[in-house]
Every structure is written in C-alpha cells, then in structure tokens.
Amino acid sequence: MIKVGIIGSTGYVGAELTRLLSHHSEVEIMFLDSRSYASMEYSRVYPSLRGSVEKECTSINLDEDLENIDVLFCALPHGLSQAAVKKIVEKGKKVIDLSADFRLKDVDVYESWYGVKHEARDQLSGAVYGLSEIYPEEIAKAQLIANPGCYPTSILLPLYPLLKEDVIDTDSIIIDAKSGVSGAGRAPSDTNLYPQCNENIKAYSIGSHRHTPEIEQELTIAAGKELKIQFTPHLTPMTRGILSVIYISNKKGTTYQQMKDVYEKYYGDQKFIRLLEENEYPQTKAVYASNYCDISFKIDDRTQNIIIVSAIDNLVKGAAGQAVQNMNLMFGFNTDEGLQHAPIWP
Image (cartoon, rainbow, N blue to C red; front, side, top):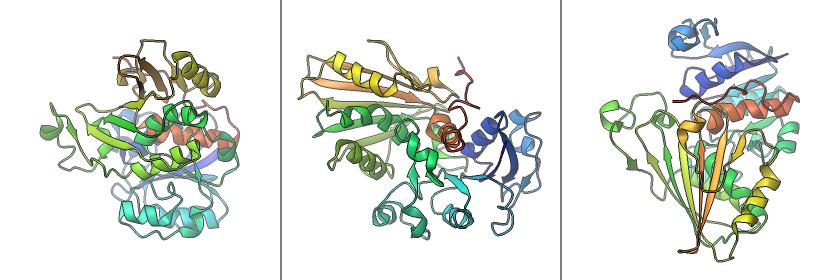
C-alpha cells in the first residue's frame, strides 16, 4: 500500500485522479489539495463521489505536508507545478506532474511557447516523459514523470511505432484533432460557456497550439531526425474525448499488412491499446471514461495517402488514467490496477 497526495484535486483532471485512485487496491489517498474548496467535503464538490471519497479538501503546506506520502500527483496548470515538484524531488520522493512544465527538454522552447519562466530547471533534466506504452522501463526507474498532454497522447501512440520502424514518409504529417469541452478546464471562460460551445465546432490555435513542440519533440526522437507537423485542434460540443485523424503521403508504398505488423509488434500485448479491424474506425464514445486508446488506419490507394484515426478519453488516457498507469509502472503494480473498468456506453 502506498500513500499519495493530489495537488489541484478539484479540477477535472484532479477529480479523475481522485475517482481512479479511490478504487485502487494499492493506494491510500492522504490529502486532496484545493485552495478554492479548503475545508469543504470533496463529495460536495463532486457529488458523483459521495460514498467513495469521504475526505475534506485541504490547502496543504509544501514545506510540511509532503513528508507522509510516497508519490505526489500535481494536477495544476502550467507554471504552477514547478515549486511543488522542486520541493518533493529535493525530498527524494516521487512525483507525477500533469502540467506541461516538465515535458519539454529545451527550456527555451518551453518559455517561448508557454510564456512562463521555468523556475525548476535543475529538475527538468531528470524528468521522464510518461508515455506509458513507449517508455515503460524509463518510467519504472523514474523519480519525476512528466505526464503527456491529451492531444499528444492521441497523436504519438499511433505515430511513434511507424516512425521508429521507418515505414511512413516524414515530409508531410497533417493532424486534424477534435476535443471535448472538458479539455478547456473547469474555470468558466468564453471557450466553455454552454451557449457558445453547444451546437458549435471551431478550429483554434491554428499553427500555434502549445502541444505542438511536445508532439514534434517525441516524433523527432522516434524518427531520429527533426520533424515538423501541421496540427489543427478543434473544440467540439461534447464533454469528453479526442478524435485525431492523421494524414501522411504514402510515398514509401507502405501496405496495410506492413502497418498492421508494426502495430502488432509494439502494441499486440498492450492492455490499453486496441487495434481495430480493417475498415473499422475509432469513435470517442467507445473509449468514454476509460484508459483505452483505439487505433485504426486506411491505405487510400486512390490518393496514395495513409489515414490514421485514434480515439481517447482526454481526461483518462489523455491525463489522469495515464498518470495512474505510470504510477503502476513506478511501483511495480499490475499495469491496469485501478483502470480495469470498461468504457461507458451510450
């Protein structure tokens, strides 16, 4: 049994962490940190967890309240995790950060894209990028995990094996991704106001989304050469889910069987990657509230293009679920412990 704490527990990602960890057989939740809801019963903030989580929200002191835990989950916005991560790393304990603060290896790239000065540079070099299916050995030995972003997870999982095995062209990778409104967070804004997002779909941050350098960093590692992508995210009027459609020119003449073999090699025994049958394509409802990533693809002989489709739940596999999966790897638990539940349908 390990003891965990969650900072930023009342955001959507924090709530998913709390939900998943409350049913984990190897975990005891020590505190649920929240500045906004300090001293309030957690089940009053999230009534769905009444009877499952009987704890009060607390506003923790980073100098005093980190001693009695084995791992800290930081579910804070970018820029705000750095102080907590720095303190707990210096204490020699483990931390899984769900912000973008430790994902990018180049601090100048981080500061340029996020507009925030990095105050924990010494810890940055030791961070392991927590893409569970790609870096399991590194994650198992890590002290600090930089949990991947939601869009990057939906894009890197289908692309990484193909680039690693050099079966796709790298000159032009175009990604069209659509996310549910929960990806915009819980704080009210023009983005997530019901009258403005209901019955509406829009592209945003075209050519400038902050997840772009994270995606390019990991694809460059996979390909062994610098890659650039065209990434366009969209906000859709649904609560959860990301559907990513990836277009690649098939200049190499890659066959369906070649791609299938690569995916089977990398993911055939992975519990949370579901490779769909030919002419069957992912949909967000099929992964709703689960830690699965569904992947399928089409070789379009007419246009000589490859079209890859992936679907994840942005709050689970794209955030909290992957964080729990990483914790399982770090502590030697079964990979799917606390994550065994099936998706919800309808």
